[in-house]
Length: 174
Image (cartoon, rainbow, N blue to C red; front, side):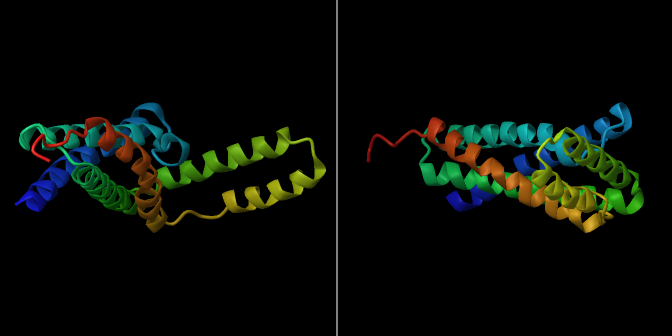
């Protein structure tokens, strides 16, 4: 029974997080002219943390006010996993239809790499940055967007652990 509630809340809040991340990404792209990928993914990480917090809080509320660390971590981890998986799928489908965000992301990467290269004074390190520029110039494939979403959002696990510890409340009968 408890496992089903964990899965239920994780799917609901993960789905809501994915929708919010995609909406923010579309606003960034169409409203601000920025690629929703790369360094502009930071708001999406914050969105995931917010939805993880509410998923864990809601689970605790529905569990009579009690939350073990393992339950909190499970709800948080699965919320983040489902949210990032769904976001990755939606962005993957989006860039299959319209690859302009990928082209913009590549241009942003190239501009950033060139700026780092130009600002570097050490000749030895400048050679290393040439590789960075070469990599930034490679074509970005749509499948990379999916993996980028799923993998980078797993860094939120640190926040999940903190949220689980903050909201944890032991059952007085234990």
